[in-house]
Length: 438
Image 1 (cartoon, rainbow, N blue to C red):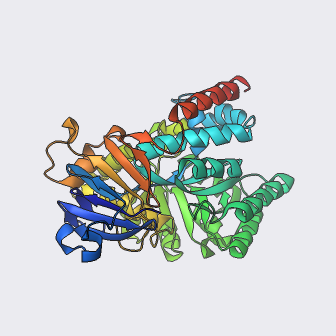
Image 2 (image 1 turned 135 degrees about the horizontal axis):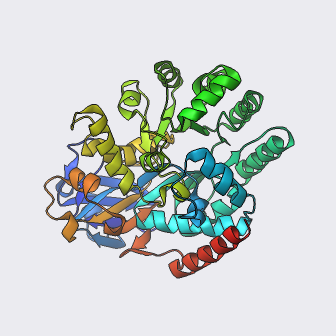
Image 3 (image 1 turned 90 degrees about the vertical axis):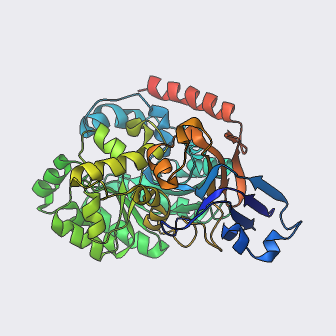
């Protein structure tokens, strides 16, 4: 793998709000960060003529870690705009689940490829996915050059549950750690209201055998909270604790309506929250109490949810909205700063997924997942504060270059690994078939 130098840009390592290096330097070797920081402090070896096979001139760009999407359903890009302006359960039961009954493996391949294309062009280098036909999703991730944690969604009881858990085992054996380590897996019971406690216990047992974490929807709506209270006399967090899920790392998607006791349970278990503000607002689910979660000591990352609800795979809208919502809710404009929001989408997201030793910051030894944002563009000029520019002004089209594992996968805003026109055409074709079959 080639050695790469990125020179002249403003380097944001995301190791702290003061770790900003104008005219900085990033050195990449064997897919890892060899150095990131002020150019004058770089080792003489990497500054020596001929060390790098490739130099990327980054003057006028912001250089930062790739964004991390902590919760999505990638192939649901095929249903973008298909069912809008509805409440969650109506949306699921009358629109989404009936269509998903007709999904094919090729639908998921091309849908995931489109999600990877959109994500990478927007600077999202890693995503945490829960869906179906995950081997085909993994092929798309491998082909596009993205990084992902992929989990087979598990729902139901009886033979349906057993079959889906078996699928998850097959996927784990075939793909965990593959694509040069860019594909990992978790176990993904959909939610406590769709997977009963006895089945959740079996998921916990499987997680112990695999040594993987859990990806699950938790307290997305008030209706869910009431349903669980009536059905089990417990909260979602009590249910997953009692089923043994919290003995493993748990990524809780949404976490909009917890009690104080729920927060204590999740914090004590080392739980993590995937905050999806756009989807939550669009489905009128509410606003997750992110400040309270953080005070409880629970790591928080940002997620898009599926594009069938959030309509896009870019995290820039989530970054902006997360900051604005917490300012408004608290009455304190400093409650969730621009740096906090960008951190949640980078280092914070990596921590939520348990990947903080691999990605999320630009530090020696970590995988070289990073992006260049073109701060010369009119909407990003001038740059008084780079975190402010990223949190409140940046859009997907401002991302110019993207590297994953030290490989340039987006250059001059174009995907280098696959034919983008073929991806969009195939995805549109599969979307028409899928919706037409419903």
